[in-house]
Structure formats: C-alpha cells, structure tokens
Image (cartoon, rainbow, N blue to C red; front, side, top):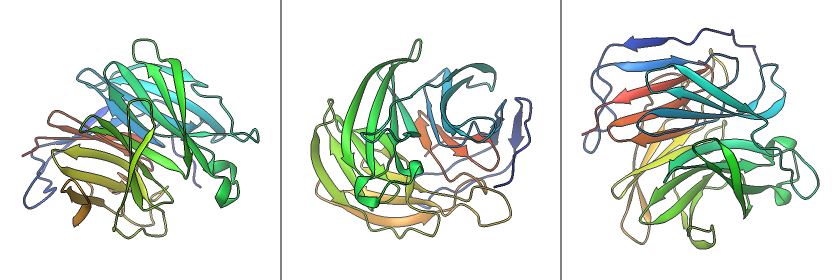
Length: 273
C-alpha cells in the first residue's frame, strides 16, 4: 500500500448537492472534510456526538498494527488521541484490530476482531469493547463469537452488529447476549462486506468496504434496507459522497460522518430529509 502524506488538520468545504436516496434521505449544501493530523488515523471507524468525533484505527503512523482512538471537535479541531487503546489478544495471543465505533449514553463502543492476524476462518472471533467517553478508559469487553464484526449501532433498544465476512446482521441485548440473526442480501465486492451502519427509523444503511488507496475503484456503496420487524428487505445501493468513504459511518442528528480511508479524513454530510 502507498504511504499517505501527513497533513495538518484542516477543514475543506465542497459545494454541491449529494442525493443520498430518491425517497427517504438526501444531503444538501456543503460536504465537509476533516483531515487527520497523523497518517492512517481514519483507517477504520467513526463515532460522534454533538461536540466531538471519535475515530478508530488499527494502524500506527508506520502502518504497524496498533489500536488508537483519535478525538476531534466537530469543527475539525484536533483534541487528543489514545494510543494502545486496546491491547487484548485472542485465545491464541493474536492481535485484535479495531473496527468501527458507536457513541451511546456517554460510552464509546468499538468492535475488535482478529481477522488481520490471519487466523483460520473458523477461528475468526470478535468482541465489543466499552469505553467511558469522558476519559476513554476501557471499562468492559464482551465476547460476541465468530466472524469479523465491523460495526455497531443502536436500534429498538438493542445493539446491532454487521460483519466483514458474513452477510448478516445480529441483534444483541445491552450485555451483548445474542437475541437474533437476520440475513442480508446485498452482494459484496472484492473489497469485502459491511464496515459501518446506522438506522433511520426502520431503515438500515450499511456501508461497504472501499479501496485502501486512490486509483482503484470508487467506494462500493451504502446499502439501504427496510426492516419490517421480521426481515431486512433490500431497497437500493447508494453512491457515497467521496471516492474513499468506504469504512465506518455514524449518524448524529442531521449529520452523517464517514471514515474515508485513502483520504485519511472524516467526511461530514449535512441535512437529512
């Protein structure tokens, strides 16, 4: 992979209208890009509240495996980062990588998995790690079984998790006991499966893995499903706002936050209908 250039933290506005769906959701006005202060910091996931953005990566500035949480203000100002934010290993002492993250009730929840340590497929496992939002202190972790869990969302009083290597979504209670498993029907491309999710009412939006660098393929897209209480029905696939917006996503109010891996930036789109 090509090394990305370290850039200062800046905010750039891109004018225009981005039609996110013909019926249920649209983005208006500017698209904002928050450039990361250090290389590879927007490599995995993004969570946010009204004031701050929390960004997960499993790579350090030299591209070695290492889990870091970066914190920025929603205005783009760099605040802090926590290196070695997760150092847990699987049962065979293999590295476990951050995936996407979620801010909920003054906690940050992040997926972690051993996929990047190249275990046999049957030994791929995942956890959810819970942090206190005020100081990013780890307070709990939950084993959630097999598969490469990439993203987590809240909906109908439960936590929902999607996977890089399984075309399904799982529902968990507040202590991450499994409640149900639902198949998803969107087709995965060569880059792999879902990296980020959020809900708008009974609509699930699941973002597919994009390219790691420029000059390959535009991000696969974000799949829209409608949940009727029994199954998730595929509606359409929507083009993301930038070439590299193919990792974690988070929705807060009228803002959608996208992790753009090749751009090493967080994209913010405003104005949902």
